[in-house]
Length: 295
Picture 1 (cartoon, rainbow, N blue to C red):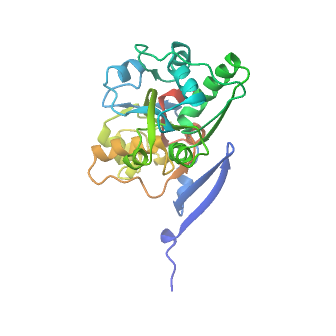
Picture 2: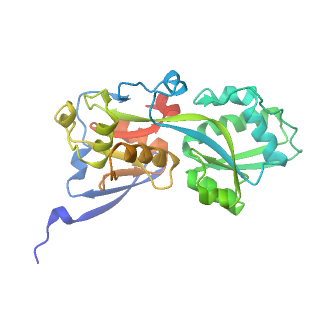
Picture 3: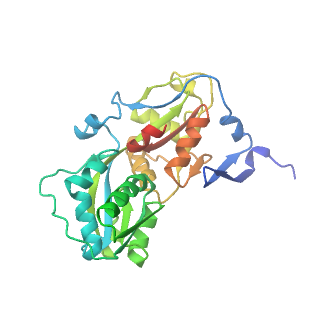
C-alpha cells in the first residue's frame, strides 16, 4: 500500500533550555521554523491596544487573568504568615516588579512564622520567578524559615496542594469548580496579562479574530494578514498550563469552534516559549506580560 508522507505524524522530543519540548508535526514542519534574516522578536498589540500596565489596569487589554495562591482550606500557620506577608506592602512591592499588585487597602498584618518552618510552594511557571524572589526576601527577613519553590504548571500547583505535597499552590488562573469542591481556597496575589509575541513577522498588531486564526492554522503565512512571505510557526504551552487556559478561553470567545492548531510546538514552561520565539523567525507564541523583559 502506498504511503502518503503528509499523513505521517512525527513525535520529536527536543531538549532546549533544560525543558522537554514535544513537537507534533507533519512532514516538513521543521521548514516552518527555519531562520529568516528580517525582524526581531516583539509583542503584538491586540485590537489596537498595547500590552502595558496602564492598559491592564484600565481594562482595555483583552487577555487578562488573576494570579492565585491556593491552600487546602483556609490558610493557617506558617503558610498563612507567608501569604499575609506577600499581600503586605513589602511583598506586593516585589510582585509589582512583574505584575499588577493587589490594592494595599485592607492588607493583612503578617504574623510571625515558627522557628524552623518549612513552606512548600509550587505550580505556575509564570509566577515561579516572582515567587522565588518573594521566598528569598522572606527567608532573609526570617532566617529560621525555609521556603521551597518549584514549577510544574497551574494544574500541578492545584493537585499538589490537594494531595498534600505542597503547602501553597501557584495558579495563573482562577481555581476550577472541581478544585474548589475538593477544598482549595484562593488567595489573590496580583493580576497578569497574556501577551502574543512574534519573531520577524512584519506584523505589529492584529485583531482578536486574526490572532485566533493564526493559532488555529487558518492563516499559515504572515502575508495572509499583511506581513511578509513566510510561514507561521505556532508555539504554545502544554495542556494544564494556566497561561494556556487563559489564552484558549480568549481565542474560543473570538472564533466559534476554535481549536489550537494540531501541528505546533508545545513547551511545559514559559522559558521554552520565549527561547523558541527568540530563535525562530516567523514564529508566534504567548507569554505572561511579566516575562516580556526576557524576550
